[in-house]
Image 1: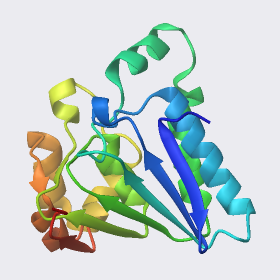
Image 2: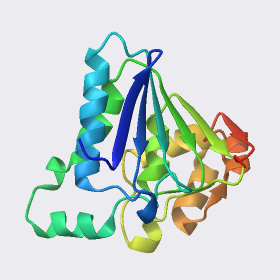
Image 3: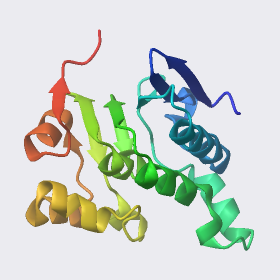
Length: 185
């Protein structure tokens, strides 16, 4: 396991924490592998009753590490073999609740992964964004289906078409998060 993803089991709660604060927790392929392994192990481990996703530092995640993402794309490796898909499959098949705790920015997969969580709690001043239009990319992680189902077509279209960030309070009001909580001091 990489030290860029921390895991720990206490009282039935498996915590998976992104730990790359110097890069705003931008996620590399190696980090996805570690997260996928932790989720797959959680599925098989009866001691795990719930999974908590969180991050170290001031940001939940700046999304994919673009340099790492580009290097993999140029390697000729089939896109379907990217470890991010292993994480998404593990989340989809996990029969234990997944709770996300978000503070700071959640960009791209940092936001779209939340659509695969059972409970999402955000800081009031968190900033959630799906900037795919600005990157000339299509929405990822089934978000073009899941986001409108969660917050409605009009709001989802606004987020996708304008690449506009929403704060935690708005995310909770729209139903993207269960609650917005005061940011930690």
